Length: 407
Image 1: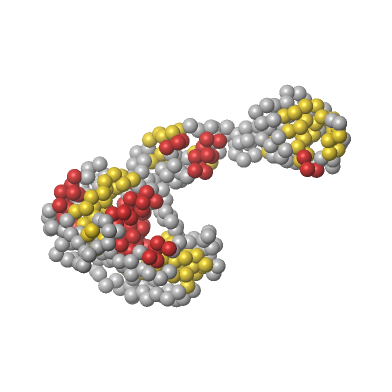
Image 2 (image 1 turned 90 degrees about the vertical axis):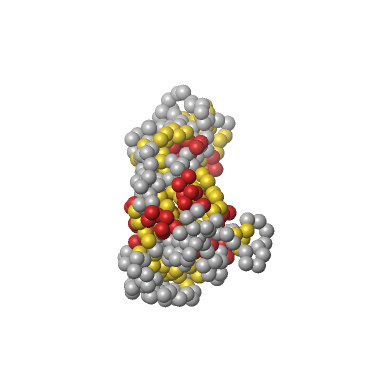
């Protein structure tokens, strides 16, 4: 079901009312902006149309010629000249033009998409014409009726799509129709995912004291949805200063390293100290939101990025949409998606100074909060349509920004 119309498509102020409980916590809306602004797009490259879907235009897509390239019939029927009745002189089909010039009182049978012959005033649809022994009768159409004129959709040199547009099937088709075989694109950012946790099981139901890994299966699809490419996924033990250090260093082919489950303040949560030892520049160090507030974003001296996500699955999803999504958009040369504000119905508690991210499902009057969204539980996100970012001043039915898929 498509989303309801948004009342406005604007971002709320970057500040969050109240005082965050963590002195370093960045307001949620500001965290998205910081992640996007920090990134620099990768150099462009050329790719054939067949490989372009999911990438981002590095330059404007221009019309190589007018579209349509010639006066073309918009209906099956008769291309006519002058007043009725008309004498049939021949046939024009797609790819097979009629070579003559129509005089007043003449016509040719014509199919949709065919070149309109010289001298034709309009096209009379089949269903409103009568063909009797080569004579066609019907009401005289207005000048130009059912003819798509040369350049009516776009003139040569017109911008068909701006740089920074994510390439979908429709854009590939548009580029092909405009005569392009190759596109200048930004490549997908390469992402390596490191899932930490000594307690994780990777198949079957977990036993007592064990937890089934949800983030290993979740991350590659999420990265692809956000416009990236997962080049590695490894499971790393919690031992301090051991496997995680080596794993972050070894993935030199990745533009972004995503680390899960090592962002809090426990004895096994070593990511911040690792980043400090490596001389990383911290861009976002905790976010004033629930769930996911321990998330972080840092840039290593090697110009690679590290995104730290909490280990709880729903908290990690929220954090990835908050930091990883905007970062990948920036690396791809795409604009930071603006979030529509729609009425959100339901009940949710929001701590002072925080933004709470809740899964929502579309409804006739906006959207409704879906159940099942504790930090470790993905049911609400799995069955919902989007996430809503509600602040401390939100009340049932009030407007809130909504994170749409691929936002």
